[in-house]
Image 1: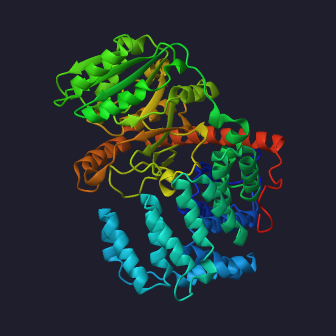
Image 2: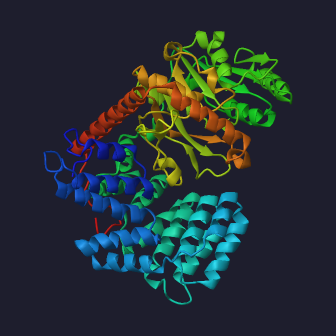
Length: 577
């Protein structure tokens, strides 16, 4: 099944969903539902992919959705229902699915648990879940939430206790699922950067029941242990078994070619642009990370910091760093009032340092960059020189397993007949929010938008695309709007997932419904939905889709010509491919 081949027969709506990528169950379930609908649609038998192949793909996607969340009873039940209608599972898999389906028993009233989750009180939530597990030791519902929340919070002690419970459940009800304790331990070890232990635990889980995620993250562990050839072999085998997984395609291509290690040099000069207001400590840390960066990847780099009317020690921080780096490297702009993010970006775009450079990069005042960040951005420019706009993978500095932003795609929403005059016109992909950062978003490709946290432009495009829109003051979504205008002008943003930037901004209570940041973001998002016509949003989405489609087809062709994807992988014997 050559899903991403140049001559792919996958219907376009389904191909769009698959190209968004992601290993989380929400994306896989959505694609499965699309495949099922298309198989039974009026045009199913008129050329293209036959209904039988669409249904087979839907079955594979539903099974993959369960494998992404293997303790989820409802996902297991949906796979069992398909198997009952048309048997396709082996007996071992059927037994595991039956155990998961039977032992995941949600409570009749989950309102208290929902309130705990909304409040994000980790310790109280963990205490509640351990209490429920003690009262109902065989109920997988509490165990799966406990394991997922512990891993997401980096609470490795709680994750280890969840795994131990799965291995030694006092009632024995969970005995068929004991091997999934290795899965929990493996993910905890990976996130704790114990890659040797993670590799062993994933291999142990695979030996009992082969599942795609165990193989993929095992490959990531092998890569970090310096065993690149084995990692590439595992990913090649995985793509042969799951040809619908664009993330594996992208990861396999980049690792095989060494693009994950690629650095290049920006020529023509670079202006590094920051604006800040009353965040002296954050700015100090960010400038320290810039001072430690290798600026030789962009000879002649100038740093410009705009002080947006700060009343704290920001001015002193800027003075101290200008004295350390020298006025030839760091320039300052001091404004008496806060003019907001869009206007600050526009002011910096007109600074002499920017006007005289070939490239300009906006960097948030609470971001920490790695030493080689300019080399990695330059590698993206080298791979896609005509794009003119580039971004990266941004993670939560406090919880680096949480991806805040990756490659975004755009989905236009149809106008509701009889609906309000002003309504949502689009939605953006959320695949990065449904997985922890285990390396699966480390790839390079075109998309609809990248984050403004670390945003590189050619200054030629920065001039032709126009100013950041001050209607989106004081901040939020002005960077997304600017990417939209780049799309309309034929410049497709490039996501450099091999560059990870730590972001210290966390929304907290002010980012939740009712908070000031939420209100501001909601208002600006509402405005943005009215800035363009439905036809323009459709054109933006189409431009990004066609670019991603071509990119995937080129990479699929290279892999098909250069690699034998189904070759035996070290450490894999038996089991379902």
